[in-house]
Amino acid sequence: MEQNMFCYQCQETAGCSGCTRMGVCGKTPQVAAMQDLLIWVTKGLSAVTTQLRKEGQDVDRKINHLITRNLFTTITNVNFDNESITAQMEETLRVKDGLLSRIKDRELLPEAALWTGTASDFSVKAASVGVLSTENEDIRSLRELITYGLKGLSAYTKHANALLQEDEETDTFLQRALAATLDDTMTADDLVNLTLETGKYGVQGMALLDKANTQAYGNPEITKVKIGVDKNPGILISGHDLRDLEMLLEQTQGTGVDVYTHSEMLPAHYYPAFKKYDNFKGNYGNAWWKQKEEFEAFHGPILMTTNCIVPPKDSYKDRLYTTGAAGFPGCKHIDGEIGETKDFSPLIAQAKNCPPPTELEQGEIIGGFAHAQVLALADKIVEAVQSGSIKKFVVMAGCDGRAKSRNYYTDFAKALPKDAVILTAGCAKYKYNKLNLGDIGGIPRVLDAGQCNDSYSLAVIALKLKEVFGLDDINELPIVYNIAWYEQKAVIVLLALLHLGVKNIHLGPTLPAFLSPNVAKVLVDNFGIAGIDTVEKDMKEFGLL
Image (cartoon, rainbow, N blue to C red):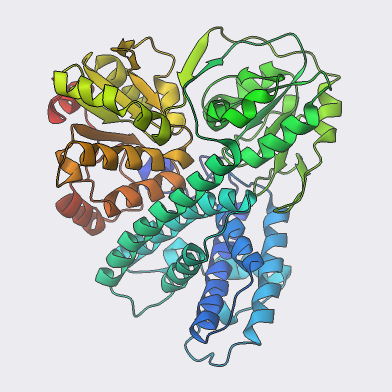
């Protein structure tokens, strides 16, 4: 079979081995090639910045932001626009070539740091620098695991940067680690150590974003979110960028246009700062993969601030806008750099001429159980554990997706004993957050900490419970981990948990295709990583039956 591309970074990759003709996500071979080259060129730029720092020279934070944006651009379902990716490549090469003139010692720089070219050279070069250019299967697996973790880390730092929070140490590590994936002297053991170090900085990056979000918008609090609609026309905002939401809410005041969240933007309702906007109405729809029917029914403009974009139908393509790292050919893009105010007036003008959304459902969902809120309930939770009312916490964070096998997580939630509480973050929650699972002594049985970006809360909660119960090992807690993964932000969450010492994490619906048998064995033997089986078997495995 002819191979036009190779990509295996997401859970839905073809045959759980790799997309070779067209991305399951909708990514074309051309876009896949440009993303491969963008990553390679960005690794080259990172080698240059790393060498500059070794020589005692400063690196401008704008370059840190460029590298972060480049990585974010290549996360699954973010950017499908070949033109915008090519433009980023050209900018990256210009920046890199300018920095090269400052390097005193170029001797140890890799080819990616020294190569330059024009758009006419890109497709030829891309063919030689993709994932499969690393021949050794285990080295390739570890390099990709690190790269995907760094892509996830870039998401955290980019959102923090949008709120004017910086962490030079994290940026320095990210670039050093990227450069290291080009270093052929790195052994498998070296790369395993770098993988765990990536997890360390994953925790640091998540902490930075948590600080940025809570300082800007307050600590999330228990909130009931309406899932019906009102009678005004609306704008639907999806993705993860809270600063984009803030700007949109400010600009829609007094316009007669309501704002609804979709998918990963749902947790915005939990922040106190957003509750002052009377046109901030509720959440519309479900997880990202149901976009086609839900965006059709919404009728008004949709703003995609990050991933996850499903290639749109022509019927609503003219209502789909992108911003930040997101992009799709034929969709209008709203520009705006860090610290700038974006102009959302085109969306508002279009919304005024659109009918209101079609109501998909009625009712409310409850969330807002980030670490500050859960710790405020600590006495109540400890009492429930000590009395036996709560016997297990089940971390079911992560991602949702299209595969029917993901119905496992709905069935698993339904089958949980009544003395088990789900801790969640990410869009995986849509598999069970509308089920009537009840509560335990007033504590809901689904505690939603927020976006996948908010998985830090789950780590903080676990560490606090370890302290409260006076335990020496986090694995002694009555917590089990049954995590659904899809893309690279889930990868950095996994690496962060491994860094914190968490063991026996189950990943599903499948283990990552980018784990070679030997690398998978290292994770199994050292950390107890496992896949999922049937609900009944896994219940027994977790000690829930």
